[in-house]
Length: 377
Image (cartoon, rainbow, N blue to C red):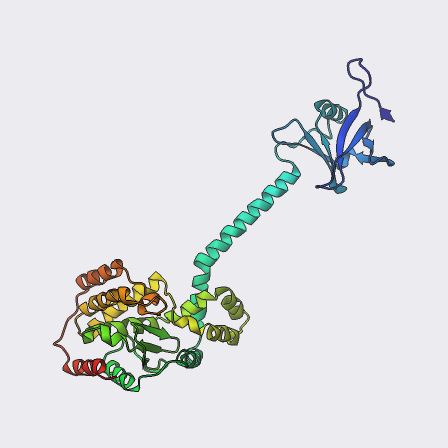
């Protein structure tokens, strides 16, 4: 049975609406007939279609006198009603079934809002993960690499780094003798091998640590520093990077996504391979501010441990600062990987005040070795 609708004794009113067969489809004008248990209409000049009232949900679109009819049986189909008369006639015919007309956004809008909220949450999670989480996990991975694997990595890295450099054998022997007379930051016995220092002939102020407990010093350093406490401060700083494994931790952070995946897959060789491929970054590696602060503190500790004037740290930084104006545009320098600021100099001075050292008389043997380092070619 079809209910024909009349409106205040006027001519018969047609219930018109727009029919969509897909969310992005074109609208098709339809005329709706209200039957006892649902709505019947013809679409696309085809046979009539029937929507049972139990399958229909009506939502009022936000900010407009428009309603969207959705069918549970046809999830991609919808009917848009923009005439209040049509909506109220349908609602009057089915007061119980349509008692709860949903207000606010349509289901599409809600789906879009949910999707946007999910994307926003995912974006925030990823930012926080790579900003905070990834470095922590990468540090854990780097510190979990057995020392024997790091030593093997160091051997391969030092070969690549020094492949085009000329090792200064005399200065290398002298600096190892110099360092061998000093108390190390940590016990280098047992599983930890002694730090190995190599001097290469290059007229630049540069020094850097390599995984596997190795330090490379450029011969240009000895033209700039004037006292052996400065050399001790430099070696103490680099030894700090070694003992804290800053090099391998920084390399792991730079490839954190791959490192994390390889670690959880148990692929240590994969981690080693990608670290070796990034060996060239050792030259210009930029440590985090936290790593630099830690090594500055350890440099101070190193001088105090050896009862040497801690002002050697300040003098070293002052010598470094003088080099800024002398750097060639393409020359890699100690400053490129150890950014120097007045803040670090002031921090070094403050550290001397807060943690004064017990200083012994100058060590004549260290002074003599230092003089030879400056003198020999």
